[in-house]
Length: 196
Ligand code: AMP
Image (cartoon, rainbow, N blue to C red; front, side, top):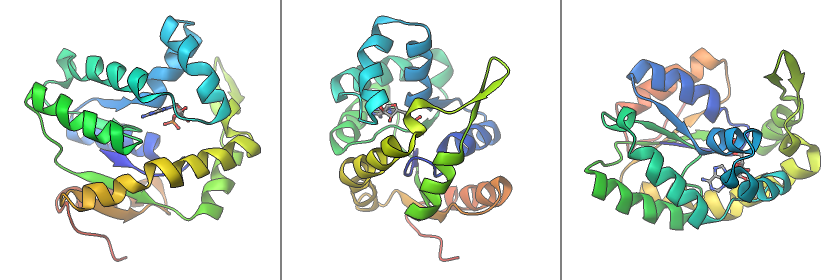
């Protein structure tokens, strides 16, 4: 599982690392965005929270992840990106994994200081239908709120998983390749931190 604040590079690293491990990357943010674009019922429920930079309520998110983890491609393992984001989600995940006969091997925390996050998020653009666009929730006022939400609701998961001996922290500043190399090394030794 990848843990880290918005802008730490979780999405990018999730794609690369999942490719190396040969497992699907499961990103709750991507699933929500696909549902918003497709104007599904789930998308309609999630949109106002996402636009405000708030977390989508746990009951919606947890049920969605439970269904996704039960799909065939996740049978041989998976990489979670952006879930869990609250201690309650972490506890629910533990139950879902038990039911499915899975367990977490490693929680990889991407560490980036807040000034760098603000710089990255305000400059970030996504390619949509051939055009570079800014995500609504990357606007400066929403970015600040998302970082606050991270500090208050998600950062405590770091201690939660450290106490289970599953946490590996890596410095996520550097090129994509450098960060991937640190991530792959850390996956070999969960429970220890990167001192570089
Ligand atoms: P992300 O792409 O991971 O930054 O997610 C974008 C937005 O989707 C977040 O700001 C939340 O509104 C929502 N979201 C993604 N994952 C979760 C989650 N695990 N719990 C609640 N909301 C989430």
